Length: 311
Length: 257
Image 1 (tube, each protein chain N blue to C red):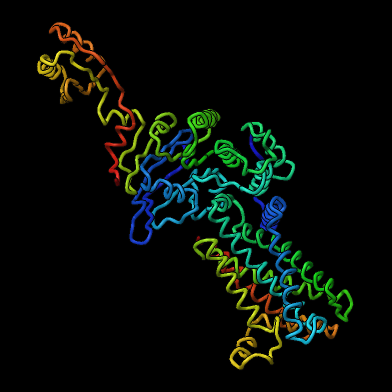
Image 2 (cartoon, one colour):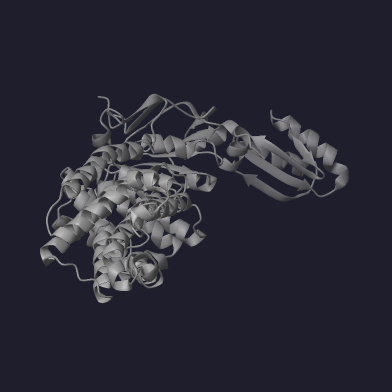
């Protein structure tokens, strides 16, 4: 049995004037997963998202949401997802409660249902105390929560989050992550764009790294990290005269190249089990070391490796 | 867990959007300042500064100036719709509207129906100010209502035009300066404040082509004769025609945006 994909993007292309902003992008998102679009500023993440959410017409290619073409069955496709934009797209001039009421009504809820759902969401996102205050007095975190609450009115199976934590302080960011994880637990499929690597690492099941409008790499965060090279071992040789010896010793144990910066040596390990023989070889040669670190590769490394910065 | 929804129809969506606009103005009553302060100020200024020079006296000038200020106020009130739409588009809230499974015309129609309140307030303020400084038209109150409605309809038709400008313009600032220039040009190069025969030939030709002249003439005729005239019918038809042309164009521009 094949389950229908939550999203099917094929050969999506968008040009602005002469510049191709999104260049033949294809990927699919399975139901229930968190899919991350990762890339530097101006890579084409938001443009891709805007095309997926019917806000922008593609020049070529197709997007299907739960099997429904976003162009031919626009209204049906739109009824299946919620969108939280990069900029808080709620009404600044009216209160949180009024925002939720109006968007509930626009989503087709009856007045009574809209009222009930509004109360529910205000509680769920801890906004009851400020429900009737003007949004002008809201903090960035509260606004973002309201924005997310508005996207969840119809409990859509698919939620698009465009840079959900950009500009938030660390505490609010963590709160937002908790909320997103809860949504995943409840069975939502989530597509998020982000330029924060730790965010992608924390939340996403699958990632597409986008740069200059193209998908440069796709996979799970773990797969992407592995491609960059495994665990990184680094240490400092205490006695300067022993550095060359340690370098040779290390080189004999691993297949990858040993890097040297002053008295510090570093090397990539295929497996963590390689660590023990290296350490015992060093002990046997009576080479004392300090500042030993064993680091899993971060998505930062992946990012730096895959994308070409403009600056 | 399932949330019950039904695909809303155009009217319901539009009503909700109009309600949103009303809420916005209720929260920011200063948005009404322009439609209240401007007609009062202009009415007093024109009447007392130019009344003597143009008509030989304040009292004699009132039948000319009251319809003139009324329509000028409609022009500037309706131009506000364009700036408001541009602001909404820039704030990103329209993106959310667009991503909802609702009728595409609803956000625009809601804005424009919500703006009727502004037009009503502007009309009442203009006519009341006129009354307070001594304007006493020689017709029954029913005809005052008729000219008020005709003015509001004209303003509403024009707001579709300004909405289109708002959608096509680059920024709210552009819309505002365009609206101001249009408002000044249309109202001053017409019979709103001066008799046409006092104008030089080229200016008179322009004023005669200016639709604002027709609207003001129609209103003055109704107020003078207490009857529905050919000109009034022409204005009514013209208003309907503007909506018929510009409503679809505005929706097209909105979809394209």
